[in-house]
Every structure is written in C-alpha cells, then in structure tokens.
Length: 89
Length: 197
Image: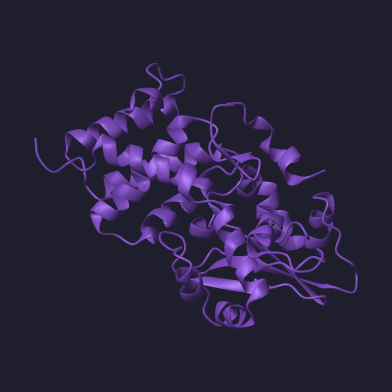
C-alpha cells in the first residue's frame, strides 16, 4: 500500500490545490493557521524554532490529537508567551 | 479577495479559534488579512516537490552542481532560487546502490518546505514517526518501497536544525533526456526516501 493511500485518505476537499497528487491542506483554516504562525513568528522577531518547540510540546501532550489542532495550540501558546495580544487596553 | 478563503460559519472549535485569533491579530495590527492571503497562496501554489525535483534533475545532469549540492545543500539549492523558512540548513543525502536514505521527524513534522512544500499527512502521523526509526526496512516495505537486504538503510531524524533532502538514484530512462523531463520523473516520496525511482 502506498503512503498516499494509507494516510491521505482523509482529504476530501476537491477544490484545494494538489501537488504530486496530495492536497496540501485538508481545510482552508489549516492553511491560514500555517500562514499566521509564519507571520507572527516573524513579527515577534523570534527564530522559527521558538514556534517549532511549542509544536513539539503540543504534539507530545497528546500524540493522537489531529496535527493541525496541535499546530493551533502551539500558535496560541506562542502568541500568549510573546504577549502579542496583551500590550494595551 | 478573501471571501472565498473563509468559512463564514466555523464548524469546529479549532476552526473557530483560528478565526478569532486571526481577527485579534489583525485588530492589534500584527497581521493584515491580505498578507495572510498572500502567504496562503504562496504555500499552496509556489512551493512544493516540483522545486526539489528541479534540484535533483540538475544534480543528475551536472556533476559540478551535484558536488556543490552534497557539500553545501543550502547554498546549492539557493542557486536555483529556493530557500526560506524550514530550509535554512539543508543537507542532501545521496542514495547509492549500497545506501538508501530515508527522512523522518520523530518529534513533530520538520520538513524542508522550500524544496518539498508542506509535509503529507502520513509524514506527520505518530506511526510513521516512531516506527521508521525502529524498523525502517519493514515500514518501507509496507509503503511499497522494497530495499534489498544488501543495501544499508540510513534513517535521518530532522528534529534538530537540519532539514534533509534525499537525492534519489537516477533511473535508467533512455538516453539524452532533458533536464525538464528528468525533473518530471522525480517524485516527492523519492526525495523523502520512502520510494525509489
């Protein structure tokens, strides 16, 4: 069985772009969460590793949790730890 | 321009959270919606395994480039215009008749975005991440990639700073094949090391 058959079967959104037969994201919010992480890390002037370590921790927290859910948890933590939403008001 | 990208009614808590977070970050002036749209477009259309395939095809036809690629992956890949987040420390692993390389990230999903795009789902799955290290020959066989017992399998864990790209062996594909035609032969999976050409 090919890896694509095995684990990419969950992809159902036909309108999303595919590369080498595999859709990049299985829902638009995942693409937005990815882009937001890249932009927020850049805005905070932090190395990408700062986000990656939080992603590792989120996955380690619950290895069975869907990958992009862990991604959003890591993004939430990064934003909180960098005080990006706390500054004024 | 963003109308089509948004689900107006989030269907899951995590989807709703992403919308709230984006709205808050926009309100604070940290993000603007257009920039998010642009980056989404970039990751969906501009980066992907076709970039890595160009690198591989060039290495196959140009021994000098191949030597530079193996000596300093990041610099040689940048020669073709590829680089950026998750591609800062590239190491290229050459497959030979004696050695088959395969890449995994045991801790999360580190992956060379500029040359391969974003990782496929199975790459991020717990079974792949744990089993590829323990029993690579078995996992590869299950994935349809049989590696002979006389070939050494080397598993590379990309959890540190380094991102790996496998340089597959050039298939016997007739003579005088163009660089573009060669690039078409290169699959994403062959550059992760879970397929052979």
